Structure formats: C-alpha cells, structure tokens
Amino acid sequence: MSQEIAFTKEELAEIERLKAQYPESKAAIMPVLWMTQKKFGWLSEDVMRMVGDVMNLPFAHVKGVATFYTMYFKKPMGKFHVQVCTNVSCMLRGGEEIYHELCDKYGIGHNERTADGKISLEEVECMGACGGAPMIAINEDYHEHVSMADVERLIASMAD
Ligand code: FES
Image (tube, rainbow, N blue to C red; front, side, top):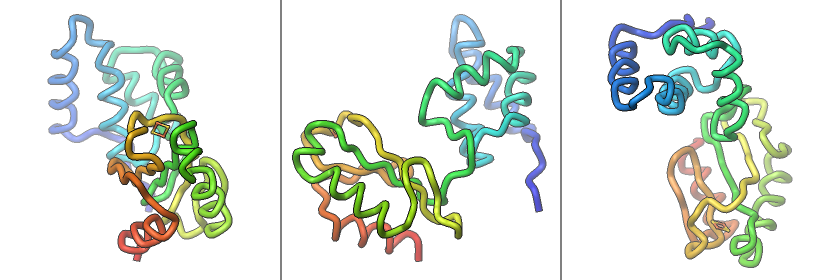
C-alpha cells in the first residue's frame, strides 16, 4: 500500500517551529527536507512539491536543494543505508577494500539497494571522522576503526 503524501498536524506544527528559527523562513528548507525524508524514506518529486507548498517555495528551489546535497535521497534507499568513506585517511586504512567487498557481497554499487530493500550502499567523501579511519556510517550512526568483519557483524546484527 502506498503511503499518503501528507504531513500530520504535528508535523506541520514542527515545520512552523523550524521556520521560526530563522530570520527568513525559507532557510528552514534543509531541516524540513530532513524530517520529510525521515518520514517518507526518500524525496520523490510529489513529496518535494508538498514541501514547496508548506514552505511557500517553488518546486524548482526545493528540488535544487534536494539534488545539491547527497544526504537527501532522490530514490528509495535501503532500510540500512551504509556509507563507506574512501577518502584519503580511510582509503589508506582499508576503506576502499571495505567498500568493494560490500559491493561484491551485496551485488550492488554506489547508491543502489538490494532487491529486498534492506541494504543500500554509498561511497562517500570525508565524513569528518578521519581520526577513526576507516569509518562507515549506518543510517545516522558512525562506526570507526572498522574491519570488514566488523562491518559484516554490524550489518548482520541490524538487518536480521
Ligand atoms: S577520510 Fe574518512 S572520515 Fe575523513
């Protein structure tokens, strides 16, 4: 069953609260898109249109923000979205190997998800946790100094 594209009364109140945090209400677009993504899992064009309506912003503006930032998903991702940093510090400590092993293990590539919808994978640039290289993030949780075995254990503990 498809999810109805609408905000609840409580969500609309939260959007108003967010808008009031900024000198110009349109600056709240990022947290509003974030809470919207949490609700729907990703940002379809219909969802972006609804955000534009509640923010009094043109669809093109909403889409521009959503497409500029990779943290906003423009297609459905996995229940567990695994981001693997392959930037310099992480690459030197095995981040690239972890990324490629995960691609092979799940048969998916960058910004793809498994057929069962459980896992999606993203190769990312530095996530600001270089001291913990190599690092990954699963949804919003960072995991540092990980080996491939750690990554497999983390994913298995969540996805089973
Ligand atoms: S290089 Fe991976 S977190 Fe900075």
